[in-house]
Length: 299
Image (cartoon, rainbow, N blue to C red; front, side, top):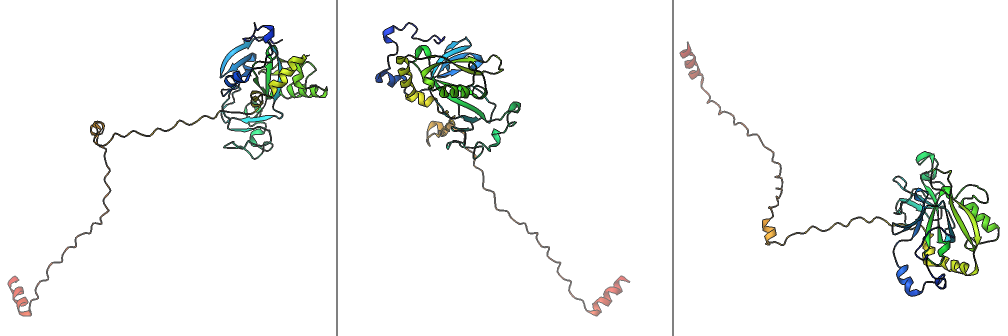
């Protein structure tokens, strides 16, 4: 049903829907990044490890939703928002109520009263804190294959539409109130051509057969599907500071190196004391007779 070509296009009928054994799982699902579906440019792109492995140029894709977050999640980036950003934001909330415990710089004690959630705090009059939901899906034509993470932006979550044109929350409510689970049917994802940014609308295409349904239930319980619905970011590690290499004393490198100037310790300030001028020795006192004789000489 899906219009994305995968590597099992020529898989024989007897090998279809065969579960992956433990030996293969040890290599296929150990470490690495989660495979995801990107909506960039209104094109469904299958991405693995940051590299595009397949794409669908049609405006719709058929998938089965096998798991996902039960609440609206929130992320806030101090820099300009990038829909393809997978590194850690500056603040985030897995439950949409308060920042997660490992947020280093929470922007508020709770999301409801956070200044980043106020309309007008971001570009275009919007709130700078972004709403999203993460779904774990499998392609309808390869339900036993890879589980992909699908991140829904706010425009794909909220709003009202008709039966064939619903945002996710309305669609999930419609399916549940009808008495069905989301993993019981094929969900058709379609791009809203009236939106200026990638926006998905949801509709039900068909119910699954017994074997396919059992496969989808098993897929939804895998570690990959559970982790794909969680907020998970890779923090940018700071580059380690390497110690400076010092040549051993007496080595050729140490002898060739210019001598390091050592700053002299400043001398203690000295107070210059002005040398006191010694007073002239007093003239010897003269008696009255000598003084009269001296005056007589001047006359």
